[in-house]
Amino acid sequence: MKAQPMNASSVVHFIGVGAMGGPMAQRLLEGGHTVRVFDTNVQRIEAFSAQHGEQTALTSDQLGVGADYVVMILPNSIVVEEVLFGKNGLASRLNKNAMVIDMTSGQPEMTLSMGERLAALNILLIDAPVSGAVPRAQNGTLTIMTGGEGAVIDRAEPLLSLMGTVTRTGALGSGHAMKALNNLVSCAGYLIGIEALIIGSKFGLDPEVMVDVLNSSTGMNNSTQKKFKQYVLSRKFDSGFPLHMMVKDIAIAMGLARNLGVSAPFGHLCLDLWSGAKGVLGPNVDHTAVARLSEQLAGWQIPESKSSGSES
Image (cartoon, rainbow, N blue to C red; front, side, top):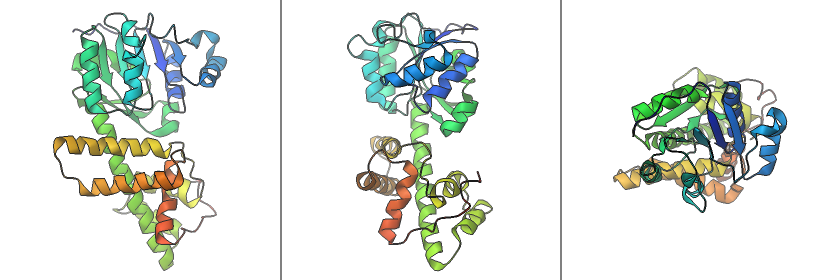
């Protein structure tokens, strides 16, 4: 199926306007596209339309009708499948050659299956999950891991580029695989860094000095740079990304390993620890609060910093 060129101004239906989706949809609107939004949380639709005009709101009956693109950033692939193929689903309403851009952190195998079902209806699909958190969603600098046929991504890239930098990861489903693996690496780096802070602070090292040394040495990673002072040493634990979503992504990565027959013992340990934290701390706490479980296991709390949170 050949992807038609993207119009200079397209009709985009954006599903899921939470903390990430809201600013992403705004970027498309500011880029000159006709953007209409939908969310099962009505307050989110109302907040978006209050800021950008009543014409941006969609009802469930209007969803997908006349759209050139449907962008989705939803909790998981099961929800995506229900939206597309459930009762009165989007797949039955979209025009031929319309494109679905799934920016959910999804399951690669389900993405491939949904791609086949949509292709039979002459509807295009790419997976384009993101990394970068809310600040980068707001300023349009997200990393967008994009899987699909080259010509289809060509058509979507001007739209995606309004939200961030497009990195082509390969065939359909590869974006979702890469996102899960990225978060596996991120989660492992976070946990080992927290354990180092616990050990060091109990020995007598200043945690702030430890973070500074890590960030000028080989121990540097995203967590040492953007999470430890900001959310752990400050004891704020409010990065804006919930624990259950992170656990979901690690589980996707380990499911991929299992399906491929790849032994990944450290990955499984990482999943066990993060899943355990969800059970102890609750699913909706911020993912950075996992540090509290490490502290409980160690019987030691990393001392609160008086100045942390001001540095990025």
